[in-house]
View 1 (cartoon, rainbow, N blue to C red):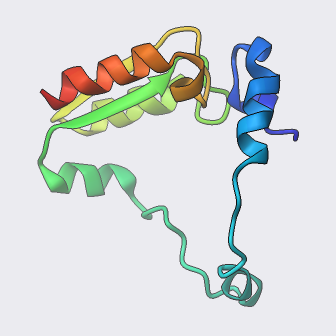
View 2 (spheres, rainbow, N blue to C red; view 1 turned 60 degrees about the vertical axis):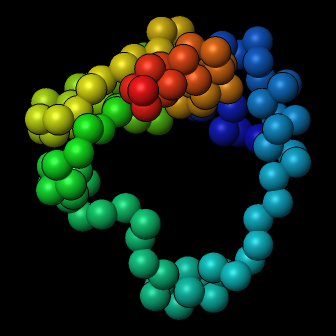
Length: 113
C-alpha cells in the first residue's frame, strides 16, 4: 500500500501498519452514491466555524510530523477555535495513534479528565 509513507513518520513501523490495513474491510455501500456524484462529503465546508459554534473544550491532537495534514493546519485550527487545546505528538505522523500510542492515549485521557 502506498499510504504508509504518507501516514507514518517512523517507517520502521511500515510492515506493522500494512498488517493493520490488510485486516480492514470496507463495505461498498457508498460506491453507488460516489459514482453518481451524490455522496455528501463528511467534511464540513467550514470546520473552524463548526468547532467555534460548539463552544466546548476541543482537543486538537496531531502528529507533529504529519505529512497528510501538516502541523500548520493544526496550529491554524487551534488559533481559530478559542476553547481548543493543541497537543502535538512528537516524532509521529498522520497515524500518531499507531506510532506513539501511549503518548496519544495519555494526551487524550488528560484532556477527558
